[in-house]
Image (tube, rainbow, N blue to C red):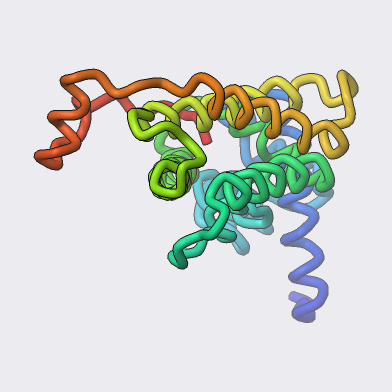
Amino acid sequence: MVRRTKSEAAATREALLDAALRLFRDRGVAQTSLSEVAAAAGVTRGAVYWHFRDKADLFDALCGRVTLPMEAMLAGASEVRQADPLGALRALAVHGLTRLADDARTQAVVDVVFRKCDLTAETAGVVKRQRSSDSGCRAYVERLLRQAVARGQLPRATDTRLAAEMMNAFMIGVMQQWVENPGAYDLSRAAPSMIDSMLAGLAACPPRRTRETSSRARIGVGPKPRRASPGM
């Protein structure tokens, strides 16, 4: 048997990942077999198992090649108290959307995660990673919103938890719809004005705390548990 060089092995691995991305995007993760991935990459099925334990490992490696938009936002988070909290939130949100718009591979992976990724054992690791970054991002956004209230950028009665959920839903909605139809508009150019509109509406008419949410905030009780979603 001919021993492959490291560069040849790396090239084979990348070819497998590229083929898997094409097939997953076209057919879905669950509907694509490793034999089909091998054939699309022009290698044997044994080559797949040389690089990946199973389809779950392959899918995890595929998603690991990119930084998902919410992960990009979280990576830019800072524990330092912001002088302009809403400005910091704007910068993070615009960065998350423009990163998606400017990287074709990220677009393809996000498309697979949103539309072609059934919740199975094969996708569980990626879904867990996605939910973790989503949860961390929401928590950081809420901290910024609390700072915005403290600095007078938002009314004192603003329900920052609900506002963070709204921001998260807005970001996920924009990303999901855009990757389904990227020709609809130039997301990279539109992102700043879209985020400005969202934040302007939030500042002008934010969700307000009710007596119940105010009581929960005082005693440190979170909201009722909610079912985890597959969103970012």
